Amino acid sequence: MTPELKGFLLLAAIKVVVGFGGLLLAVALVTWLERRQAGFHQDRLGPNRVGPKGLFQPIADGIKNFIKEELVPADADKFLFLIAPALVFTPALLLFAVIPFAAPLPVSFDFELPVVGRFVHDGVMPMMVADLPVGLLFVLAISSIGVYGIVLAGWASNSKYSFLGGLRSSAQMVSYEVALGLSVISVFILAGDVTLSGIVENQQQKLWYVFPLALGFALFVVSALAETNRLPFDLPEAESELVFGYHTEYSAMKFAMFFLGEYAALITMAALMATLFFGGWDIPFTTWDESEPSLLKTALTFGAFATKTVFFVFMYIWIRWSLPRFRYDQLMALGWKVLLPAALSYLMLLSGAIWALEQLGIEQGPLYGFILCIVNLPAIYALFWVIDSGRLVFGQRLQRRTMN
Amino acid sequence: MQVVNFWLFSGIAIISALLCITRRSPVVSAMWLVLTMFSIAALFVILGAQFIGAIQVLVYAGAIMVLFLFVIMLLNLGRGEPTDLPGRLGSLIMLGVGAVLAVELWAVTRIVPDGAIRLPAGTMESLVEQEGAVGAISDPLFRDYLVPFEITSVLLLAAVVGAVVLAKRRL
View (tube, rainbow over the protein chains, first blue to last red):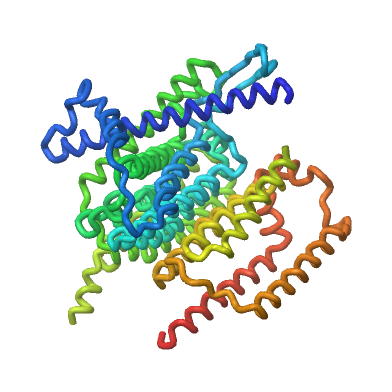
């Protein structure tokens, strides 16, 4: 191995450890945040006993989960029952690998260690664990693997509630994956690139995609809620009808792994919203962060990225504690009859508008964004008209028809 | 490095494919098949076709196999059942078919393909470098081979319509 390769591997290992350690720490904090926020929503305090403001509550929960009894139901398929939590947990963590969380950092070192030899690195280090050439497609591919954990957990538990939860989740996640993928295509069309670093760079130089792709963003938020099994789409869990759905039979650390996986997926989706539509680590109204990389810039841009991500995590939590759960047929109708046609026709509208703008010779920039934003307005209005007139989602007319 | 990766992932693919056809429980078999798909995706990535690797995971491992599992569970085939292997004659026939397949595979590896269907070493890598992982596929697909591509999609549509018509006699 050459010294350069060794330097690269060393940096990669550090990024993996720091990145995933940081993500797990963030997961712990978000569980605390969610419980506190739920408390405030319900006019109570939430956990506030362990540590300042209850901040150490996740640690206490972790210790509790480690010393609880591990149960395996009598007729469960042991092997699948044991690997199911890992199959939820691992993909949720892997997703974070391709998200750029700060401006590149200049790193140069040249040192020698007794046994392993010389390490050399000179140049800028991209602040993401892996800059894959397929970028966002990796996110879609790995998030589609996450469904196996839930399905297998439901099946292997050998309990009817778990089984129904598993069946529901497989249907739900496959359905909403389509809408999620189609809403992401609008970003691809505008950026002309699938790597997340390329998408961020494009937004820095031109404009944040939330303005020209407002409807795409809305579709992404809704399908991301369904993909992560959060309320109002948490049908696989649905504690009022299925006890706890797919993890009814799980206890102790195996349950905790489902929990960690769910929150890691939540953070990753929030980070993806920030990256795809809100410029990633870009600091708005200044081009200072795009020039020569330095340590200060990396720190500040990380702050910008974290702020945006925390904002979307908050949005997730507020949605969870504000909205009631959908009925299952409403959920499937929303996915297939509203979101999928909406996403498809939006793509056609968008590519038509972009083609027209190219023919007119307008460069990507403020004017371009403004025109696309105007194009979005009637589309948004049409979508809300379809949803709000109560024919598909709320099913009033359907109900009337069946009653007659 | 490339050779090590190739043997690693092709080994995993073959072993999990064997486990897929020897397990009794259909759910467990389906999971081994998922692992096979994954290793094949890794082989595509080794060959420099990252896009096809990602699509392999997204479509086969992520969507089609989930539907397989869904159907297995709905039909309640999940638990292990006594073997349905045929008797001695059946085993002999299967062994014969397997031997023919093995000889064919051996013959295929002996053939040196024409220059026209062999890319010079490093072509894919430089193409991906130039156009990005997606551009390297989409450019030929939507420019040079647009008509065959669209005809294929019509074929798939016909298959979907046919399946619906067969399954639902009264529409």
